[in-house]
Length: 232
Length: 383
Ligand SMILES: Nc1ncnc2c1ncn2[C@@H]1O[C@H](COP(=O)(O)OP(=O)(O)OP(=O)(O)O)[C@@H](O)[C@H]1O
Ligand SMILES: [Mg+2]
Image (tube, rainbow over all chains, first blue to last red; front, side, top):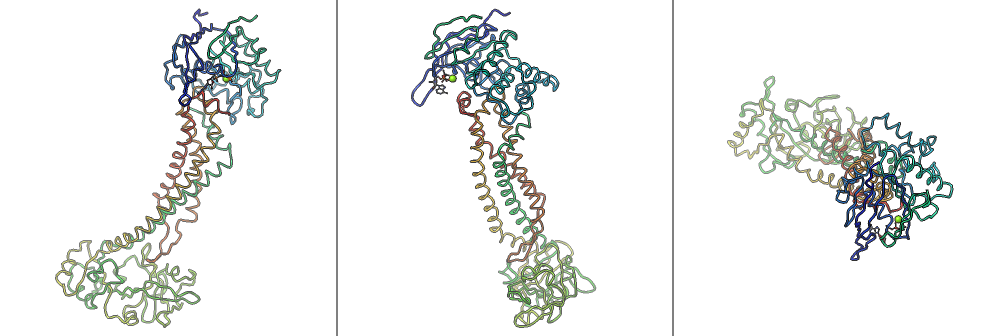
């Protein structure tokens, strides 16, 4: 395996302007995430967790600092370039799933593949594989509103991984789920990290959820606190 | 590119909004096509009324209206014998002395109406070759010959207009001797009478004008005649120019129809924009999700435009069907006479372009408002 970390943040800073005021949700943050690691991020509300995740996922651009992912500095990419970069490198899992309500589970999972030049057959195989991986091959043709929250989130995970990106980011993926559904989602993420070598960065408020990860970091006022390795 | 089915499914996401868009587009398209067909029909009638071979001699100073023009009775005979190049048949020149008179007529069981009477002699048939008798014969003294569209202005059912019916004029009863057609021209709405008869009734010893049918569209000899015989005080107007002048006279009416269509269209567009703002705003998070997946804003915009275009074009097509069914050929009366709404290919195209225009123009502002904000903010808005 490649020895260089998949994610390398160096003095990463993000400012937002709120009227005349400037807020700085991230302040000169340094972080390395090795390939294949499942990292959990915790911290109080407003500590900058989502901001950090958005930077890592190429949804937002840093104000200062370096952000190297998979050997590429993405901090200077334009909005259009970032968009293409995201399609190949990141799968984003949201707290509220954000499935497209008018499309079936199958069609939702297929969306990322339509950006690439797969043949129709390849696409079908990949979508079916992804849905099988999350245990929903029998719900392929259901619309999101015909699925439970846990099932919706698993479809969202299938959508995030179908294009086989090296990095998955998840913002409170279990925040809206009951205990059982949360457990199955966490188990799935663990599996993706351990068996499929995905690097995962997950934000959570739930210490139980954080236990699923390999490492836990605490964020407070835009800075990382201690680092603790979790028992495997 | 987003799959086309995404646009299609979104179309049916909110049936009320679909209905609203559809009806709005239908209404605006119908208006545009209505205005277009109206103007097309009027222009066509006025241009069809002018023949390049025909020249009108009118009184100098009243070139724009035969009804106001007066020329000496003898002008017709002098013109016929002096001007070279006039068409002839069986020793008679194609010279039609005419009296145009706005008179009050009354059909049985109908209101008294003002209508254009034209007093003519048999030579009129040589000058207007497009004119043909549908029924009956040319009028003699005490008779009238209405054009086939005259029922409109007379305010009677079409089937009542036939030879034998009686019309009241200047306190006397006139028998309809025949009905004539002159497709597409203003003449079809007129009522023709015998020239001498009409002159007696209106107590005029002059003519309104004389129409000549030349062998070629060259009118120089006629102009020369009018300058040589200055004492007759004649003005020479090619028939086409005469009707083009009338078309010009009615330009403000045509302008009004367009302005009305435009105003209502703008109103509908404003209403449509509002609904679309609301519809897209509720989809901000979803549109941001698509961007997160790697779809460009251009691709998403395209899908939104597809969606709106389908609704708008569907409305336009419905409007087109309705227009072809109910508007095309519909007879409209105005002071000059009657004409038929004309759904020409240009009008149909204008209607479809209206749908296209509404779809694209209506989508852009609300779509851009949803696509411009930075992604993190858009994702945070409740989906
Ligand atoms: N687009 C933005 N514009 C202005 N301020 C922002 C923006 N995004 C985040 N912030 C501010 O940055 C700070 C950190 O926000 P962030 O969403 O990263 O917190 P968080 O740790 O994810 O919180 P939570 O646990 O509530 O999700 C907050 O003070 C927030 O108001
Ligand atoms: Mg957050």
